[in-house]
Image (cartoon, rainbow, N blue to C red; front, side):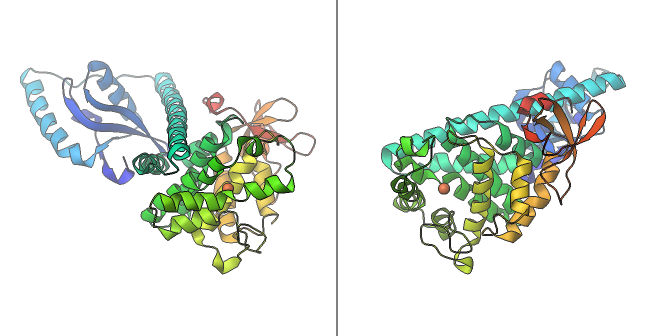
Length: 395
Ligand SMILES: [Fe+2]
């Protein structure tokens, strides 16, 4: 379901007993929450619809079903009026409205968490199929791409960034990295105002950019210590392997093929596999490189601790990655802080605080609020990581 497929509708359109085809969403902040799908409206569901309308918010249904819904609504209204029915009385206190609002926020996060885990499981199945047959199962891969595109359209980017920053264990790296680079590629493409077809293709590039790692021995991929020269040479073959698997699977889109082949190339020629420079490196490769670097740094691996998003922003800002495309890095530096404001963060002294300000000249040390007091973080009390995804629901 894409945002362009939805249209708004009043909660009062719905009557008990109506069968609703398709999805009904509620717009919560910058995100859309699925309320129901293909169901007969019950009294309880109707109450939920009216509650969601409380804050002058509308419901959203699929455009293709709206005419049928309105026709059905007209028939039910007639029946309802003939029986002398009155509209349901909704009388909810401000406290109750607040409670409902928090419940919706929690429901949104729980749903997102479940969707993210489900996405990763499906990516794992695609990876298994590629390992077995050396070919991409396109139906499954395209459906993953579509799901990520929908999530990006319907979900507040800050919640997707929360998924990327928090929800993984070091043991399951490949599927989480594929999901995250797919999401980051899509978000960057959106932030760059690229056409939606390019955004979709970028998501696909991110999802598949590292499939060549399936040919690299796991003991090298997850080696806790430093790699030998031979092992590093082996690892560096993975982008060529990704390209080969895609070619063998019948991929013909050069944006994707170049994107995966060159995601480790760097503007100054220091990358691999070919050491190409600046204008030889495509936009899709440059975007995938930024997504890849961010996600690799924020992940905890067998051989390294994770970096906080603030340290990564600082690294980007101080041009330690000047071999990346500065235009893309700058968009990232502008948008990512917006996704971190208001989130809970774990501090090095064991406390938890809420991020209230990120200084663009000093990304490493944001100002956080703890028990109503502001604290300027510093090298002695610094942000270690964002707090667990579901713990910050009472924002
Ligand atoms: Fe890679």
